[in-house]
Length: 148
Image 1 (cartoon, rainbow, N blue to C red):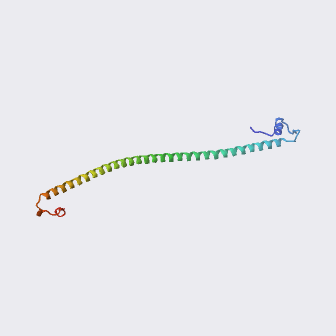
Image 2 (image 1 turned 180 degrees about the vertical axis):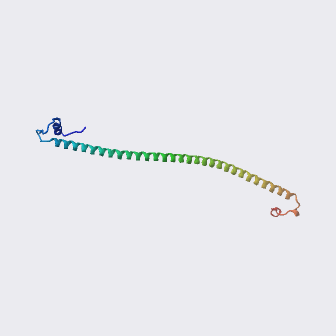
Image 3 (image 1 turned 135 degrees about the vertical axis):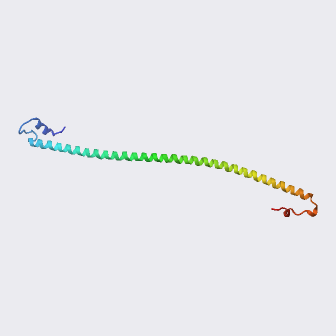
């Protein structure tokens, strides 16, 4: 509804060709012009509000689009993070298996080295006993009797 100044309303409510208000003298043309200005003012306000509403709608759409893109990026990053965690878990399991195998190999190599040393000692003992049974003339130094 158009709001007219109180003077314009009082003149408009009393139809006549020429009425004079006690405070001011307004003609029907003045009232018509005032109502036209009020309507123009209202249209201006309405147009401004429509423009602001359109700007807000566009800004809202832009923010919603950015939010959607952000959520999509977040989802992609979460999938990549899950893949990285899975690769890490597999790598850790592989590391544990390798460490276990390395420990087993180290234990086996120590066992083989002990067996080898024991075999060398046994062979040296046998050589010493064999040399003890040989006559003195046939004895040679243990260094020259060993053939590689």
